[in-house]
Structure formats: C-alpha cells, structure tokens
Length: 231
Image 1: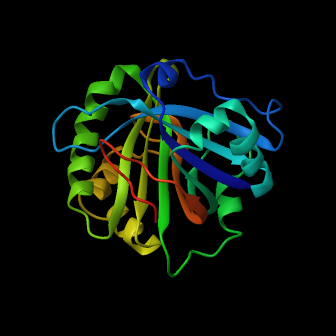
Image 2 (image 1 turned 45 degrees about the vertical axis):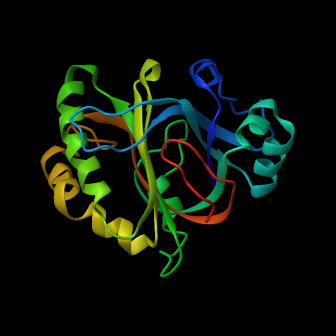
Image 3 (image 1 turned 90 degrees about the horizontal axis):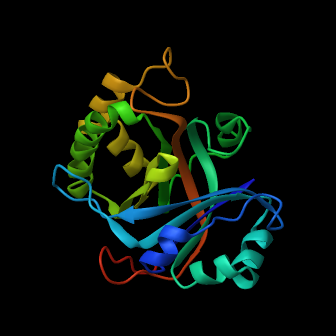
C-alpha cells in the first residue's frame, strides 16, 4: 500500500468539475478523492483558493503512480504541480474508500527519526455542526501559522461530498506530533474527540481520521498564492 498527494493550480473550472478517477479505471489505484484548497489564515472564516486542487490517493505501488502522472489525462494535469508519494507510519481512524485497518498498516512502518513528514486530516463534516466546526478550526489555523518547524500547509474541502481536511508538511515527524499534542489542537481533541459517538472521527466529522506519512519521493512546486517551493 502506497499513498500519493498531488496539488496543482488547475483553474477554477477544472477544480469544480474534476471527476476523480475510481478504482478499476486506473491500474493500481485503490481509492482517490479530490478537494479544493484554501490557505491557512488568522481570520474567523476559512479562506478559499478554488483555482488550486488537491488529489489524495492510495495505490498498489509506485509504478502505478508514475503511470498515472505520465499517461492519464487527470494525472498529466496534476503533474504540473507538486506531487509526492508517501509511506504511512501513523494512523487514527479510517481512510475514505478503504476497508483496511489503517492503524495496523501504519504499525508496519517505524516512525521516522529524521527527514520531513506529511500529515493529512480528512473526514465528512456534520452539516448541523458546521458553524461550531469552523470556529474550532479557526483556532487550529492560528496555531499552525506560528508553529515551529512548519514547511507548508493548506486547508482542503469538497462541500458537495461534505469532505474537509488539511494537508501539512513538517520538518520532522516529531514537529507534527508536537503540534498535535499541544495548544488549540490538543484542546480540540480532548473536547471533541469521542470514541463512544464515532470511533472514526469526533463530534464534528465522521468517516476519516489523522494520518502521518514519510515522503518517499517528491517533485514540482507551487507558485502564486500560498507558494510551495520544491523540497
């Protein structure tokens, strides 16, 4: 099992109309989802960047990712941005579209003691609790903006599918863990994570979780709003 993330400035029309490939349509693809991006801001409301899309996917192997980027129309569009293949080493919850035990998969890989780390949070929000969720999320974004050892980050959203998430890149796995266990993030977990109500999420989202990855390869960059140079 291998994961990948692809972030590209594809334009508003492409982002809003993108049909993400499904398992069986692309060799080696297990599942994929697409979301629009939004830079983290200190404001009360989340920002939007509808011209930038992020695709998160799970694959059988690295060769499948390379063929997708080189041969599939969607893959060729995404290849112009920033792309990374990743190995899962930490998991809490479930990955949308997969029935695998994600914690068991993560336990197969030791936590890296050096090198960059990529963190993904993902889930489906409860509509009736969206306003409260946005208030809590605003505090998390403010914490991220002043966190040490941050490389880059963006919010993610696909409102028609009620999907929300974050994609963050850190100098190390320990930096990401420190962020998660302190400040507004730790307070949000303590107050809103409830296994009794939903073992896959918390009081604001369901059907997702938190995942830590070690990048195996990365290429490309992002310019414009919320730029991301190659690393």
